[in-house]
Image (cartoon, one colour):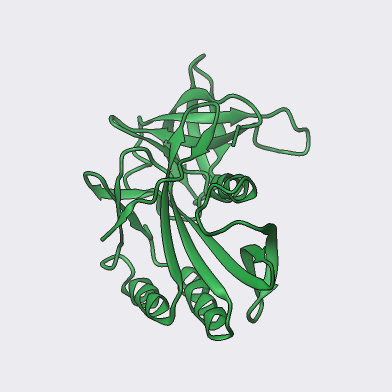
Length: 230
């Protein structure tokens, strides 16, 4: 997935109100950028951190920059959670996700007042796919989800399990949106309810998939190599 505009470097001054970030551009200007991430961004929002932002000239947008990548000492991390669905959509459409090939549709109603990120149709078989962007790592090489309590995430797991009970396949796909991890585990200490919901979903037949990406200021590329789940 290529960004619409090549990203430019900046320095993070502060992140606040979840969706706002003050940044300093390389020319010295201090501006406010949109921060499209509803999570805590644990370990990713320290003042002085190098970031990459996407400029825009859309007259309908009040903020002219969007925060896309945080650059740590040894990793780049995609903090725009919307990128994950775009990356996975491209991967599904070209058959890069093993076992998930077929007609791909996005934002399909299912369950009760829910929309699946994707529905993959294989003949008469429905495969419901939810995508989560993973940005947290507190131990070298280990990616974790979530980085804050998420009742919505637990609900998604429950709805996926319900679809399996109806005879469909269901997948929770974690996209590790940072380039320094080769393992994955639920962050049970942060949200024990979510971790329990994931364990219950596994037991009910929900498939858990975890994939990495490659990150540059121009694009985020899906890597079709499943990561180890702990």
